[in-house]
Image (cartoon, rainbow over all chains, first blue to last red; front, side, top):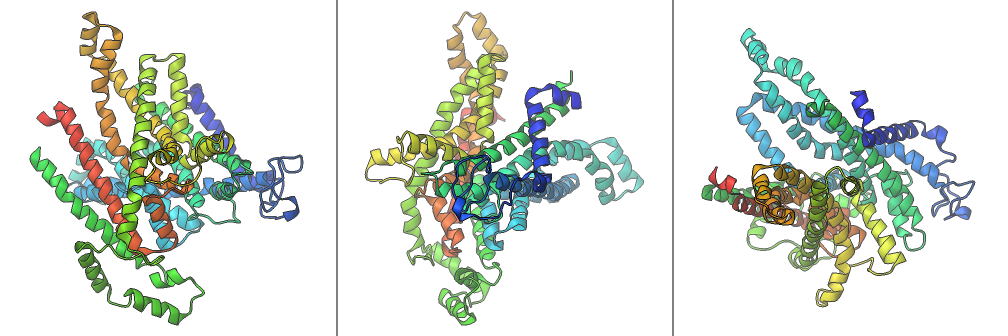
Length: 273
Length: 313
């Protein structure tokens, strides 16, 4: 699997980008040259220099440090939301699909209604009710992801449902719950994990959009989204304040997307050489 | 086929009812109550109570729900708490802007995406294919609001060709179009990435099929084969894709309207959410999902019409 992953150039790039990003996020306190929250009005809006490699924002805070610390939050929310949504959605979807009949049909209806709504609006609505903030953003995105993972888990579950050893287990008297947990779930974790990486990219992007719109994490806590929002206000005279964090965001989304693509291709039995 | 259409149409009011009910009760589940949320945490208890009475929030919930539905059925769409104006005319005024944005986005998406997809399929594994696929990958991964900012910096600030703010005046078509270009181009680029991938995949499949082989062996020019035979069939999945893309399209419209400060439903809804203006939200979100369902239905019907395989199944 690893060799297939590395041989493909784009997925290799994705892997490298993702690893760098995770490292940066984890090592943020060590890597960041300055305190991301420390203001210094005297030095506001400085262009890149030796002391501030990416310049300063309108409060005099070092942009590079803010971007480094923002990676923690953006990637953290991305991971958290995707994992939470995947866990709940996969379990619900697999169980309902396995049971079949009316349960399955009812679940499909609910999924269809939930997915006919733009994800962004759903998250905005949830955040309007709950209020903004880090954990709530993660929760909102996770909720939006649940129907998608429920639907994603249908395929592998349907394939497994008909296999003989399930029938044998039923014949021996295993309960539905036991079968679902011991046989179905372990086998669908594989394909779901591959999809998970791409959804982390989506979660990062949605968090940034929500923060940009003012519904996500609020300043002064830096996230790429709200840095872009603050930078956007000064777009006419200092475009780099919005463009630089945006580029970091773009690299993050790109990295996870490429990695996800690569993983999917590496696991695809049709492409096995 | 007929019963299928009837059943789909019958689903529309059900979905609307579900959406409006969810939003209605969600608004009233805001911690502290909607009046408290409207006034903010520094408001006194009497002020909150006063507002609750004014807005009719002190009545039993089911009574509020009933009278809300009753008003809806009589065409009364409620009044905005924030500016006191009726919701209906506000939404009606903003509708042409959002509608034009969506249409223009689809135009850009197809205009840029179909040729790109065709190019990458026909010149498979060539330089053009790789470049085209990289371009479509960029379109897929770049966050739309960042792309909007990039376009603004390039075309509004540096080159000064297109305006950065606003939707223009409806009465002045040229001004309207002028304000339409950048917002629709942003979402159009994103959409074209998806479209080019869909077109590439289906065209590759079609080009290796038997009837194309027959057409070529008959001696027809490659261009003729491509356009008159291959593309027509390859475009069918693209139509299906349009239906799927609807929700992404509308979500993108919301973002773009905020970035460009453009009049439109997206911005109305986002502002209403910021201000907790729940009458606007209740009706706005309901109408929004009405549009999604209606367009989905339309696309499905068009798809069934152009793909004879579905009709006969």
